[in-house]
Image 1 (cartoon, helix red, strand yellow):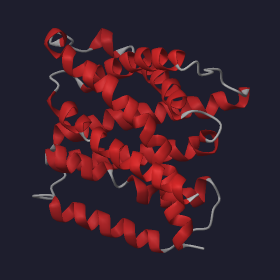
Image 2: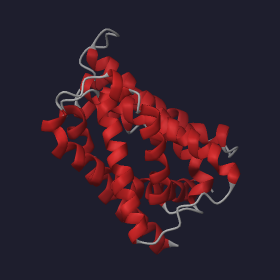
Image 3: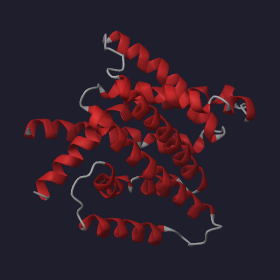
Length: 242
């Protein structure tokens, strides 16, 4: 058990380091946010499908009742990615990523509501401390400020990501993390498809290398992150709250 936790912790640290590059790419790719996310999802679906077929992984949904939570998870993944990239573009990479990483506390606060586990009052204190930290780091707390708007988008993105993790948590044990990510990026691609017909894609030719990097590199890391983080978080949580 201890070895499994160490392995998950190792992959979590690697994934966090690599996924952090999405912040830089998300801010500086010169395309509308919805277009970036659509290409990220569509290209990732191609890469992940090739990877899973190479591994000969079963791609079928095991039970019909799982279609709904997978779809809801895909909707919240789309909301998470779009609002996160808006946070990056409106504020900066540091504030955008910091506001996103409020999601562990949100998981702790939402878990008793969604999964009916015991509520720990200390998590409220952690949440308040994080919000105070964000307030201190904000140059000027003005709702009209783009940086404040960016932080609010980031916090909402964190909420969407936390909700998605909890929705899919009980299914994660039965599926490879890459398979779950494959389902999600397909759903995101379908949801954001209309953006291609209504938004400016004139700068696409010069942005292909960055889109390919974002799709290939970061989505593979997110799939590993999705598996490692909940297991590490829960092991720490249970260790100190027995």
